[in-house]
Image (cartoon, rainbow, N blue to C red):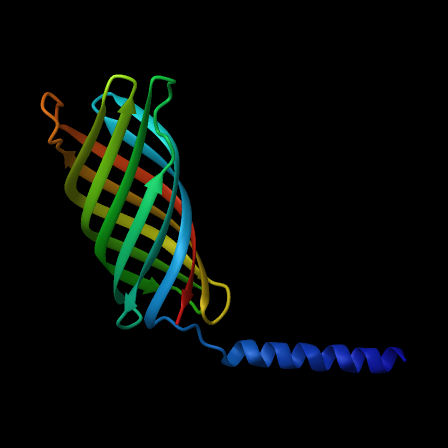
Length: 185
């Protein structure tokens, strides 16, 4: 009985290892996924932090070059009871990847971003919007041939303007650490 169990275990191990040896990670084509993150917004000498939730997707033309779009929103970034501050952003960027092995790769991206910030207070509500530059980097881990987990950092600098009379324009820096998962088609 012990000998049969050993042969069965050895057979399962051989099949599993041979399947993994010939499986290659798919790095080209369309991909789509979701992410959660921690965000910090800095304006002047002040900063607020919160959580971000979003989606991303793109197309990898080959192992090292792709185009990626990201859309995310935040929870309330204000740390008081008198106002709420929410942000949302959409970015498009070329993405460059360095493949380390079948499992891990590093990526970097530089692109443009459209950002909107809404400040709601008891006195008045003000909407801000603007365009800026987004820079990002991270590490990607292939869990299967098509399922990927990634840890990333994105930085966006944007000059926000408002159409509201009397509202001052301001420059804001958004920094996000994200954990994402995507499916490579």
